[in-house]
Amino acid sequence: MINRISSIILILFLAGCAGGQAIKTPPHEQAALDVHLRGTRQLQSGELEAARMNLVAAYKLFAAVEHRVGSSATLINLASLERRSGNYRESALYLSQADSLAVTTHQGQIAYEQALLALASTDLASAERSAREVLNADPSLRGAAHNLIARIHFISQDYEVARKHVDQALNTLPDADLQERANAYRLRGKIDQVQAIHDAGVSFLEKALKMDQQLKRADKIALDLKLLADSHRALENWKKELNYLRRLYLVEMNSGENEKGSATLELMATRLEARGLEEQANELRTNAVTFNKLGVMPTLW
Image 1 (tube, rainbow, N blue to C red):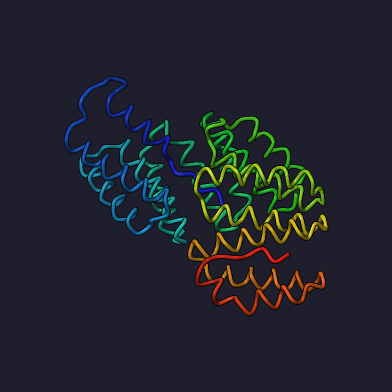
Image 2 (spheres, rainbow, N blue to C red):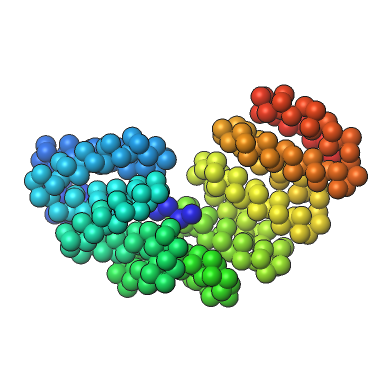
């Protein structure tokens, strides 16, 4: 999933407060901004409950003094939080309130979040319509918008259109935007994977993996490793497949995803059996409790 936090809004907010000048922020606004920044960082790191508490507090501080820019920025982040929490009605209400504030520089971000919300609700037509609004509203979000349009067409199994937009995303996104570039490389790899262009797909998935490692995103690293294992299985390179599954198991078990890790261990045992390596498969199953407890996995092939 694309989860872009509106950090750009924070920059715009700071510029709005200072009017482009290096002036001291009034105490009330500074307090609101501090709480907003804290909540946004928590949102970025997945601490949703803590983020909700701080972002709601920030919104109240901004709204109490009719600070339109700060209110709008905080509402967009709250909408993102509630969408990620599965609370789509609350997310839509926050976006509607932000839209009513009519902060011109926020319109692209609002449209982007509306597209994500529509996608989460499986309304693909509305999602694409909002994503295309982003292309016109905010040049800085064009790469992310192309990424999102590509994802919509991937879900619709319109793979050539998806490929076109993900390539546009990669041509547009700055090198420093590791999160969006990783999303684009992963999607490009998945497109090649479903079209059985596995060698090219592996190359894109490896690029996504390197970026997700830089970002320290265990969930995305696990996804990349799973996709790479699938690609190598399709290429009938069983040792590479098992090596990626082994790495996937270690990431899952050491990031608290114990059920997923146990399922990956069983998949490895099944794949070993398929290669006629029953002894190694039995060793995996026999020692599963120990491996799970210690978060380790020897190479048995």
